[in-house]
Length: 319
Image (tube, rainbow, N blue to C red; front, top):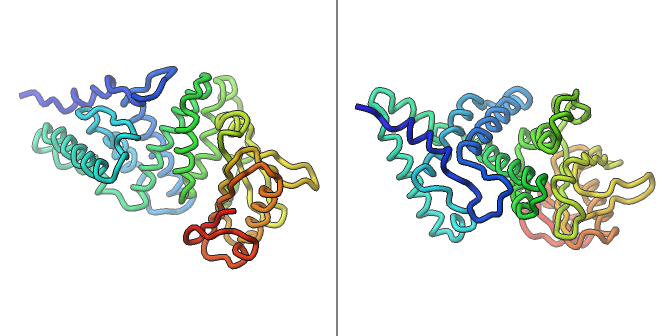
């Protein structure tokens, strides 16, 4: 008796993603799955080897290969529809789970258990599940950069939203990927074959960075150009490195925003602390470039209130 499991998985080649978007080149579910698996494995290695986290890169890679297997039956549900309401999201999760179970039921009995275990996110630790989700988003971001590089402005908003998700409560391995690997997706083949010139790739163990991201409709250029520029600014009194779409100041000049909205996140506790980030935020406000500045700190900060920042959540302020 033939088992159709593998043949059905191969039909990932026929499932197109980004169905509501104007694409310069179609992306199949197979391409997305491979990109997610590669990113998940690499993130896992970085987490385990650089940050000494108890994660399993091989387990992550296998789980990523199966993470969207339900779409072989359901197709790719556009994000605005899938997450349009809590009730719709919950119902769609049930549909996805039913599709996964249907596919896994098509395996021969003796191997069904091991394959199902490898495909299940329930077998992952909480940290590994976060890494898998980040890898999924990184694959989407890389697609957005490819489209922007082809002159397609359709993906600009999706790129900003995806990057904002990755930076909301970022894992150090995700920041490492954004700084050291993502810029490669902006290069030509000739550039990729050259020795890596970026000092970010030479960072020593334990060097976590404060990542400052400015974006908005008023920002000149695209996310792709922002990342390709590789702009780096070290806060003089905080030691934090900011990689973002901002204008690098000349000596004695303040930091100047290019976008309408600035998001500043503290990822360098103990190196200048809240004070350094507050001063950077005030510089941006004074430059007139950012209409809204959102600041994330490790906890409550009375100094932020004294300087006129509005509390909008735990450790979260707006100016």
